Length: 314
Image 1 (cartoon, rainbow, N blue to C red):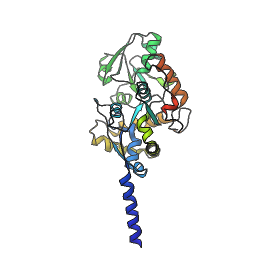
Image 2 (image 1 turned 90 degrees about the vertical axis):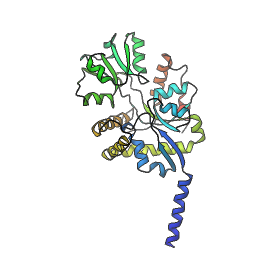
Image 3 (image 1 turned 180 degrees about the vertical axis):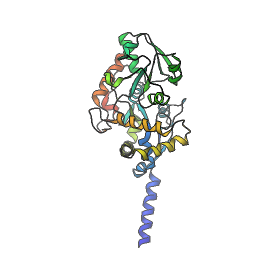
Image 4 (image 1 turned 45 degrees about the vertical axis):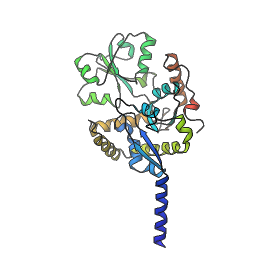
């Protein structure tokens, strides 16, 4: 009898594995603590428990997560809210499954010690990324006629040290850490979240087509991912072990100290926009404010519909 029950259990588990839906998931950059919750969900079996066979495939510098979603290479990706809204405006409808980062992590690192707002750097040379993430500073520049010279770069450290730029845009969980590790003390660090530009950033996205064909799988993936992030918040050292496994496999030039700082900064940015523990939902007021700004400055032609963007009443 015992053997018969064991056989039934084996058949049941095998049946689940056979019918598990394959999902290709792509974070928006190379392995790092920014995506710790998804690694944890995979390594701890949360996706498989939900009946999902998940593969994590990272993008490259020439093949972005958004490109992988558009051409069907990936089913689910992470993206910043601004990029997702701009993509949805261009007839590639996206659905937000989970909003992880509730606050802006955008900062300005300046050489001068008296920089209190972006207008203090009118006419200056400021480093920025080659692709994306700088829409808000460009809006401020345009609105206030600051005549800033934006210098597109990959790594701001060398130009900053050489004095070739007066300031650079950065992320609080990334480039700001690199400055500290290099022993550089900036003259000023301006956090955009403290100056009325506290917009949500990272979230989980799928195409509308995939969402409407696979609503249950989308729900299960989001729930398992949320479970992964909740586990990371309560098990940070173990989460770092998992992150470092992915980092080493991809030969990413970083270290545990760097990733710990990043993880702490990311989890802080996850806290609910109205205060408290993460809600993992996209705040409608913040969405509407960003919508208005994107239309005003010509980044999108018409407002993105909130209800459609979050997949209706879910």
